[in-house]
Length: 327
Image 1 (cartoon, one colour):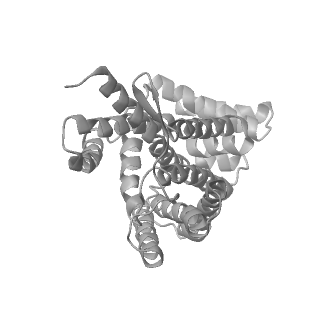
Image 2 (tube, helix red, strand yellow):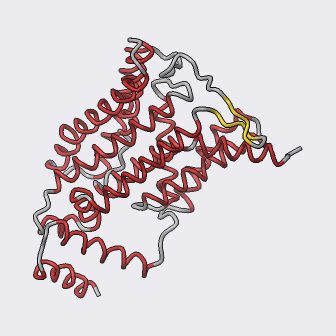
Image 3 (cartoon, rainbow, N blue to C red):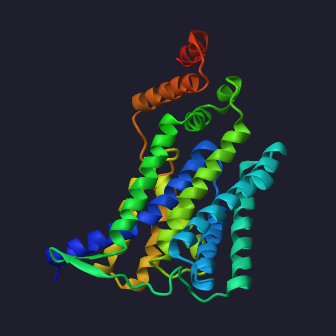
C-alpha cells in the first residue's frame, strides 16, 4: 500500500539521483546545439573522467577532492582532443553528419574497450564504500550524498547560464548556435567556439561522473547506457533547448525510479529504451516553443552577437536587415 512517506521518499531519492543525469543531458544538448554534432563520443569522455577519479582515489589513495579535480581535467583534455583531432579534421574534410555520428560511436566503443583492458569488467566506484550517513527529515531518509549532489548540479547549471549570458565566449556560442555563417561574418572564429563548447561540455561531464561514481557502481560500458538517457532527454526536451533537456532528465529519472513501485526492479533498465523509442517516434522535435517565442529568441541571439563583438550601430543593423529579409 502506498503511503505519503513512501511516495515522498521515492520522489526525493529520484530527484537526488537524477542530478548527474541532468548534467549528462545538458552536456550532450550543448554540443548538439552549438556544434551540431550528435556526440555519442561523450560516453568515452565520461569513462575517462570516471576512471581518472577512480584511479586517483581508490587506486592511489588520494583525497576525494583531488580525484574529482583530476576527473575534470581528464574530461576537459579528452573533450579538447576529440574536437581538435577528430571533429575539426572531419569538418575540414566536409564529412557528412552520418559519418561524424559513426565516428562518435566508434570512439565511445573504443574507449570502453580500452577501459576493459586496463581496469577489467568488474563494477567499481570512486570511493571504497557507497554507504553514506542518512538523516530522517519528516519521515524521508536524506543521505549525506543527496544535498551536495543537488547543490553541485544547481551550481553547475547556474554557472553555465551565467557563462552563456554574460561571458563573451558564451555569447559567441549562442551566436554560432543561432547562425554560424552570420557569426563568422562578424569575425567570430567558429573553430574556437566549437572548442570552447566541448570543453564546457567536458566540465559538466566531469562533475556528473564524480557524482555518479560516488553513488553507483560503474563498468566500462556504463557510460554508453547513460548516454541513451541523455539522448532521450535531449530529444523530448527539444533539440537545442538546454533547460528543456535538464527538466526532462529530472522527469525521466523520477519516472524510472518510481516505477519500482509498480513493476519489478529488473524492468527499470527496459524503461530507458521505451523512453528513447517514444521520443524518436512521437517527439522527434521535442516539446518546442511557440513560433513567436522562437523568433524572439533568434532576435535576442543576434543582439548578443553584436554586443559580443563590441559592434556599433552599423553592425547592429546587420542582424536587423537579416531579420527583415527573413520576414
